[in-house]
Length: 224
Length: 305
Image: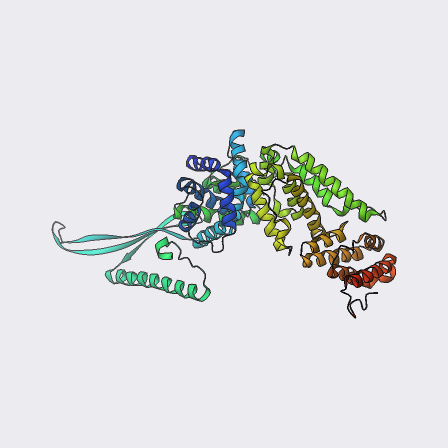
């Protein structure tokens, strides 16, 4: 089934930048990445790899569209050749389309490369859940205790509310949960324990399989 | 659905409208769910995603027409690669091979006049994974002289190399120095490689497959040489083309073949030896050739007479 795409103005700028990248360098990159023995798992590592062939500006303009195109190919079950064909329609003038044609084969090869495939797959699987946490914070309140007449504060109670914002199929939601100090200490302990478990299981997996393991949402320095 | 492109939110709204109108198939509902997650993912990850819409109805697209303008070339050489060029003429083995070569030359001559833009489009928007490797090799041959101006040419040759390895053919078949100035010679090498690989890829017996086997063997790819013989002979037998198979045996250049290929031809045709009159003469010629070369060993041809 054919797809059509409509990038926003910033994305269009990135795409236009991509068409201006030296086509020979881009072809070299496509061949290099499609033959990479140990493809990276993280976008930042991939960016470093791309920077070995392209300039910093070119690499930074190229990576976001590549990842998006890789995800489009995956999520819409579309062949990479059809994805680059669809992106041709983004450009309005024949000159721009001709520029895109020059780099389209390289971009198609990049989308198909194990490097892009692995990164996009890891990113998508990281967030492939029905409900996704967007934000969590704890609101701490002071609730005054008034006297009978309501004119004097006699004491106060500190309360906590955990506010969780999340997304699901039908949009954004949030939920508030009252917590006491014990709950907060428990939660803190559980959070530290979860981080520790994640590090432990990654190390075990990496040692056992000699394969990289991504902790969802982790930054590069922790994943190296 | 309107062909206008929309952002992710519009997709959701549109899809819901289609749900109400009962246009949506179960598959598209799945797609909607996946896309919805994708939207959430993008939001969460802070990495913007392109608005995408699938064409729900089979509207003809002007864009598609534009980008498929080069397809007739593919159709042209696909017809060359098709075994349908064979007819029932007993001499077809040799003739069809020559016809194939002529068609390839004609194709290359016509394709060579294409502009760089047309070549860029061909290399970018042709689904080479769906085409036989032999078709890709012909594309490489046809665009050979323009390769310096076509960065995607090297990508296609890398793709061909991998696909050849995937089907068990030695990639050195196309690993010559493509930067040298011997254009015509190397272009012909791609055509020859296309012809040879077509003999392995086709699911029907290809004309000239014995020549292809000898060429594979000359390139030290014995595995492909033997596969070429066994597969094509098997297709001849399966399609009840014993007469054609008998004619194929006359075309076998046993003088240029090594022992492995000679024995493969005799072994593959042994089950039908009584219905292949030319096989008897071939057996004697091979026997003499092996003796002359000093490789005839006791028992080598046992059971193959």
